[in-house]
Image (cartoon, rainbow, N blue to C red; front, side):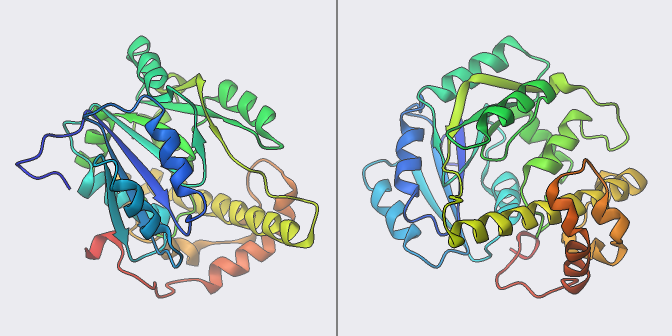
Length: 305
């Protein structure tokens, strides 16, 4: 955390790491080669980790004082995001970048992002494109067409983050991913009932992130793929619950926990949205949400820190 004796970083990178001992060193190395400056800072948000991620990060940080290790007990990306935005990030920093700890970012990506935002002052955020996975081609086309914002690697202007703080926006604990809700809010200029303007998110084709697809050649890979799709289906239900809630009561009614809305879940809400194969599991998602209402967390959420 920045103290009164420390100079705020010019650019700040939040890296989310949950059991990423095998990936985090390469991820940090790619960020160091993405145009990182001497006055920039990397916060590695190690959340709910049970492997050697912390030891690996501390080892890398010995050779680079720009890397700060932040250990968070609760294993939840939404919680770690809110902790960074409202407790660690400096309002004086001009660019905030968010990276998942299992990806590699492209060389000079930070430079490309800032250049694109400089050319498009209307944009509140910048997004990047995927590379390397089975679906990366179609995914990239959809991001460019719809001004998507994958949570794997994106950036917010300093002014955008300052506004998020002023509005006391925290992503509800238990929300799967930061990107669906954040994109939904940014496109509406943080007004749930506002009109959509896609120019508020600017894709940067020159900046990308590399990731590995889940293998489909063995039973373990197929199980992992199924589990991922079920998480995405639950995420869809979460957004279908949260959007009407915010439209009705305003952004100030953002719940602290997403499961506080699960009592309102219905099979119809679980099925709502563009049809994909995972929608066939809408009843599974519905019953899971109802069963998970107010479950205890193994860790301290942001609002109790």
